[in-house]
Length: 200
Image 1 (cartoon, rainbow, N blue to C red):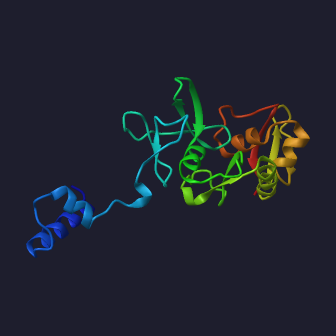
Image 2: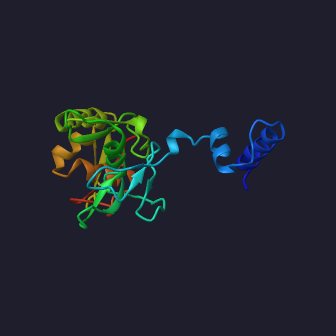
Image 3: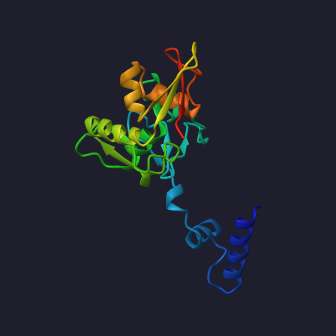
């Protein structure tokens, strides 16, 4: 029993001794005194991902009730391999699964955005739905905050770009690939004859 659990148990025992609760239904009494943190309560995901459940912190449980560990894809997003309700295997970002489960989307917007730009923060309060054009515009703005240096592998020549987006256009390499290499999350250390680092 960790310290938090011990403190809760001691509080429970004290409440019992003072007659605030009975021991007729310990579990019910315990839940009444110490309700679950609403951020940690799991909710079943909608179809076609109803084998899974997630909470508002962006943690995901699989069909067997085990908390799943995502991996980071080339773009820096936390991703899980999942099996859809029809039995087909696919992958889905944790942010998308959380948004589908908790955030209404009456306008049927297509993209999920991280409000604070931290791709590791998949808390529902940090997510929102955006249209794809709006997301691209926001990504361009975000990219403008991250100047990058492209280094040619053969010559070592360095070229600095004011944004990831401008480097992507100039070199014909995708935004997510450049970002992934600069972040160290891409599956390869270079692409298109270049490697990338964020400019200081």
